[in-house]
Amino acid sequence: MEIHQIPEQLPLIKHSKDIWGSFAYSKCKDAYGYDKNGLKRYALIVQLQYDQTVTEADKEFLHYLMSQEIEMHKFHPYQGLHESMDIVAYLLAKCQDVNHIPLFEQAKLSNFDTYYGFDTEYIISAGIEEAITYIEENDLYRISSFFQNKKEELETMYTAEHMERWFQSKARNYPANLEDESLITLMDRASDFGNSAEARELLGKLEEQLGSDKKNYSLLYHQAKQLEEYDKALHYLTQDLPEQEDSFDKVFLWLKMAEIHLLKQDWVQAFASVKQCEPELKLFSSWRSAGLGRSLSETLLDISLMAKDSDESLAREAYRWADQMLKSTNNYSSNVLKKAHQCAKVLQLKQDKRLYSKKVAIEARRINRMLR
Image (cartoon, rainbow, N blue to C red; front, top):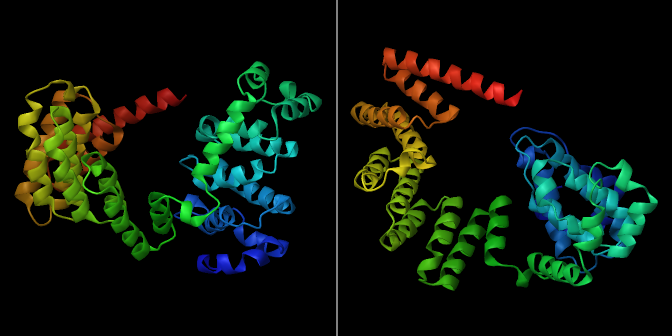
């Protein structure tokens, strides 16, 4: 079943268990959530958010979808907390069934990000007293790794008023009517589901809605970049630049511009943007110890690697500057060192190639010691 068929087929999907398997977690590289069916399941969950016919009779179906989301989050190589899990958890929470507590516990324990990001309120969404009774009767304070040492927190931190506000917040985040959804959410989902034309149309509506208010430039830049509307992204960065008074913030914006130019495969303009940082760097020294120095170095190395075939002179100039920065800051990551080694290799700088090869190996050993 294709994503565009889900709205029309939703009643059939809900009541046909033999179809549910087509939305199951299936480990797969280079797919949404590294899950072959992840994007399709996300589209189904979004459709359920707007489905006015969802009732307690659908609890088994929602439980199934939640279990598949848990599997995806457990095995996702970059962990994270996807909106798809939160939406289906909210739909389950509205059923206010204490039997969902173990499922919500599994969601919390799926990975590092879910442990801290998945709301604990889900655990007691069936009612504070009801949830505590269930936890005690099932001895979860003793046998569950999550519930250990949580008794006082669950009994005192979450009041009825708090839970009411929480449910109201979730209802605003996931409205039951499509027309109540925010343009940003609709645009992000259109982009996720491959509807590029719709996403760009929604970006135009968002621009009209936000107008020329300067405080929205950063938001519009991010949305334009996400949709690969690079000229628009540059426009908003350029508009935002005069508003910056701090040298750090100016350098940060110039680097963003360089990144957009690189995405446009225009390394000449990317290098020109980075050059704008030079006078600002002289006005403050903290960039050497902060991540800004590392970002500058990495951007220059990216320019060098991209320019090497068509403009070797530019590639060498960008590399030399990055090399100087790396030597003066001593603040770099394994990824930056690998790029420096790659640059030295393609530019046939034998001494630098050996130097960065050693640095890459030293950094790898340091990381391995930390992980032991």
